[in-house]
Amino acid sequence: MPNFQRPDNRRVADLRPLKLTPGFVSTADGSCLIELGGTRVICTASFTPGVPKWRSESGEGWVTAEYGMLPASTGRRKSRPTFKPDSRATEIQRLIGRVLRSIVDFRKLGENTIAIDCDVLEADGGTRTASITGGHVALALAIDAAAKQGLCSPRTLRSAVAAISVGVVEGTPLLDLNYIEDSRADVDMNIAMTRGGKFVEIQGTSEAAPFDGQALEQMLSLAKRGIRKLLTAQSAAITQGRKKRK
Image (cartoon, rainbow, N blue to C red; front, side, top):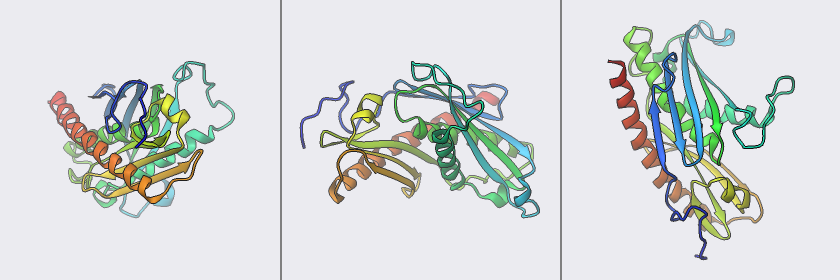
């Protein structure tokens, strides 16, 4: 493996410093601030009775997601999508929604909707995967609160899910790319996995050079290792969030 010095001196399989703060937004049904290195995202979950019209009378609920970056989140001001939709944000929020829906038992949710909102405060790479990881904590806390009110089953979540980025930079597979690494990556991937070790989503792109099966296996191995750590942190954050509410 080529020698590659990461900008922050991490080893190839190291996550950036991680902090999950549950209940960050006291007015939300569920919330979490996720900090992963220089990336910070506020994730909130809002529980609403009723479902979209196309879902009505099905006996099943729905989970949707929205994603946005605050104007100063990237240093240079990013304009708000007031008139023209942000196609990148639309693609990312669809990803977040797909991944979080994969672990929800919609029958046990009942005809209710949970909206996950992910707002990026600071972006230093991996904002979509951080949104999924923090969004799961917010989702779990919102379901917990609703279940206590008898609005849905406490067993609505079938599993936990988290996500992380991996990539290849200068021939070296890396876990949890920051912006500098991501901007130089030959390969960029986003991977979501459940607590049971099953993949929900694998997004991979050759940015500069095609990759072979060996590189793919190395990246998947790194992702599994990182996601297991995220899942452990999620579990602790959810427990902490529940204690806050008592």
